[in-house]
Length: 576
Ligand SMILES: C=C(OP(=O)(O)O)C(=O)O
Ligand SMILES: [Mg+2]
Image (cartoon, rainbow, N blue to C red; front, side, top):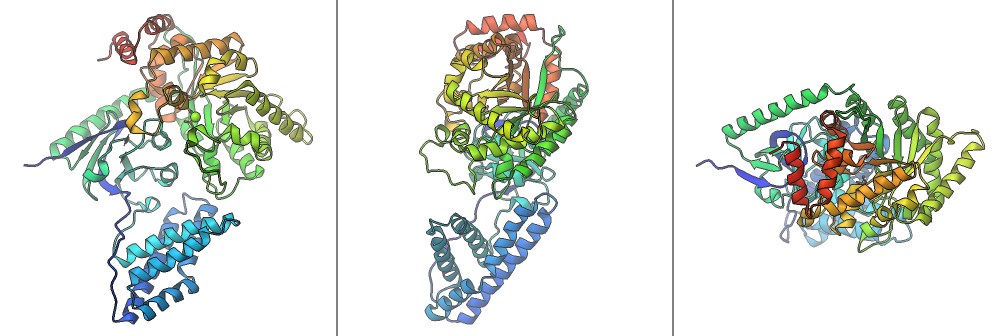
């Protein structure tokens, strides 16, 4: 009898997608050692595999041209150059002729020697990085030798559902949302960066399924239900029909929300709020405007650094910020200074090996240690403020001393810019993220020093509950509705207001339907979220009364568990 399989995971990005599975899993490249007799034929296999690899890279480069910049495209040229290296080819040839080794063994041995040699050049970071390139190229050549296909996200040119053990932010940045109809991973939590990117790209997604890579086979149809976290592998026709209907109902709801695009962000009783967009690159501004965002509440500037192969210069950064702020047409753009480290490393900026990178040398901690690098970003931002309202926000601030040090460096950067452009930067608002528990508790002292707070609940919850945000095994501890957490959030909002600072939120909780009435009841001013969630939130906000929301907060804070709060909110909202 026909049996589809349902794999359950964490719903990470709304929507429903159906397409054949594209496994982002490396093929098995192991081989048996053997002696060959016809060494000339064996070397001819190597030549063919290398030639095929070059042709594939040329095609991938050609296809990616419209989406990637010159620097990213140059990586393909570097890989082609390695495949044409006469020294490497002659060593492979010698090994086959002299030792009668198989093509697989010779390629494996020689490329491993090359990459080990490069990796050992500890005084030359550039050459060390090339070691990874040689490994990458060797993998392609080996798969061609063995007639196995290598996954290649940038080259996908037909509808697929991506199935992977784990997806990195750099994988998502190569995805073309036109073809990627959904994604399902074994690992990851709702606030992992891959999940956040899938929402930005509007790709229905399920993370933390634990078993999708063992259940789904290459090419098998997969339904991704990003609304409730079910992946249906090899569905029946009836199931496909059922989900097509569900997708149509979701689209109808979306069409209803779309009517809110020019509406103000107001509660039922007429209180004004702001609903802003979280963006990763200046290109996302277009979508933010199309979704009617009141501004950008979080520009994750580190993605600018991550998509480059070198440290972006002041001029390069200035151009990017200018595009973003000009694109928002007078609406404010909050740029968070670089939040590198944790799960967002930079290839060209070696960071120390750390046991706990999320608790380590990251974000503002790096910037305060390397003020010249920090100032380059700040000068670019101040200069871009000529083209629209830019606000600057510091990530991961724990103490008042850190905040003051960051502001001091900002003042120095401003003085440098003002030597050429007097008064530029005088209107730039300065804020900080609240994502370290100590900062949340100490919000009154910090609020005196800033124009605004933005609560980063992704990290705040991770640190508050001591539960890695990307680890599905502890995802039950992602509890935005936990009353103890809610009381801390309320304290942060109240502290901001006591000191005339604005209270914003840019963590994923800001777009959470069940959290919305609670946050409105606490008086949160700005809600910054994936652009895809803006209209749904605005629609829901227009139906909520702030006095009733405030009563809901009082009642919720008297409860003891997240489950009890969830039940209470659902009852008040008349949800099942
Ligand atoms: C918005 C946040 O920043 P990021 O998700 O980039 O860490 C957060 O921590 O909530
Ligand atoms: Mg954060």
